[in-house]
Amino acid sequence: MQWLTTLLSFPWGVLLGFLYFGGLWWTVTKLTTTRSTALLFIVSFMVRMTVVMVSFYFLLMKGLPNLLAALVGFLVARMWSINSKKAQKQVAGDNHPKGEY
Image (cartoon, rainbow, N blue to C red; front, side, top):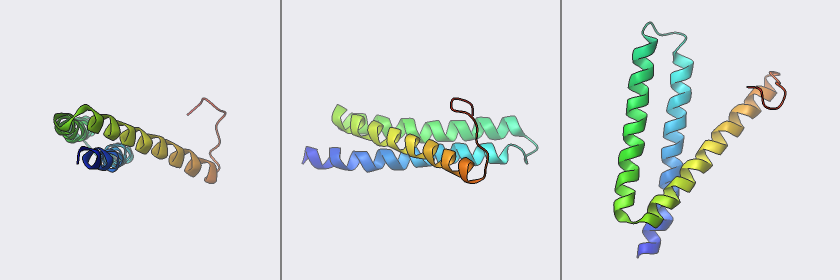
């Protein structure tokens, strides 16, 4: 039964990654239109970190393999987020030389 929880930890990590990096993207896009940028940035950071850290803590309580599977899922979501934003920039014609963002 341990293998099932480990197997389910990977998609949970992907979901956490999408929530974290999606929240980061939302925060960055809203920073230009809000009056209190520092408050928005700090609150967004605290909410995102709390959700991710509490989830990782509970996964660690289930065992190290569960945490590692979730971390791999989180990193997969990170890579997907970065690559999708690069693709959007290229479609929009905003091409930068490699290494400059």
